[in-house]
Image (spheres, helix red, strand yellow):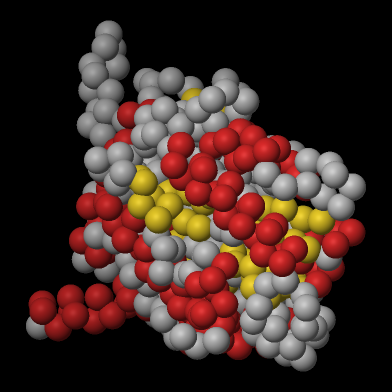
Length: 441
């Protein structure tokens, strides 16, 4: 009977916490919570967002909450408190972590399926948290964690233009303790998320592999008189059938003049012969994102001018890759270690526009960004690129006067030995190889 109960409990977890995601082992999330506790040196209190009643595409967990818990349910909360040594009249306290689950709503569960509750004797084993409690106990447990320690709560403090899932639930603390300070936990989490563990790297690779397959399918499908949204739809089908739950961002399929519009996403035009099309599209696999861009000639063959610009963009990317040094290179900055500067200097010394001006003025965005739980993953860009970091290298030139936009974007990972791994290498990037792929060769 015990085994049968545990079997059904696992089923509940798969439905309510995993949602068929390729979830990492509980030990990975536990290690992150411990690492955060050491950084925070205070009590961490985080709430998962509530599900909107009019949600069209379903609930997606907050990145930081998922990073720490692996829990995908809305409306749950966690408390993390570091160990405290005995001092004066303050008793010692061991490291503490608690997951708080809402009480069962049997009526709602008829529509959403069964939820894991704190009443399940295996809740701690299933979620990997040392303790699991009913949400009603959160005020009492937070007060215990704060007793005798620093009057500081680390949470997701909203800055301008942001919302916080924790702000309203934590109003009880503000009412009961006027001397309590709230500090933003996000910078510490960003620092931790800068370096991916082995499980995260594997999930990113799966997202990249699915996106590469989608781009290969697009290369075979792009032709004159095909609409941009047909290509977008085809790619979303291709990465979905490979396990991605959603696009990592709004897909960009911009042909002709639209190829020069950086964040064009209407995807409403019909592609014409003689134009190029910039395809910036990728999926999200088990919450982790890829980000790949390829530029294709709509009729399968680059013109001489298109090929010239294309090769210059590819050359800038290759120069940045060649300049990479683990522990030294930075994505941004004006120093010699900046990969962005390497690419920009390349544009200054290769090619001209129709008026004889340098091409670096048409490089209108940064060279890359971190990827992970978010396609533009937060991270510390002030530290050199090194082992465990995953990021894009994506130079681009956009010349509206010529209706030529070219961006080549690949995903990279630095392995434990400091070697730069091109995760998206299976997607052709050399002009001749792109033309062969479009011809089905």
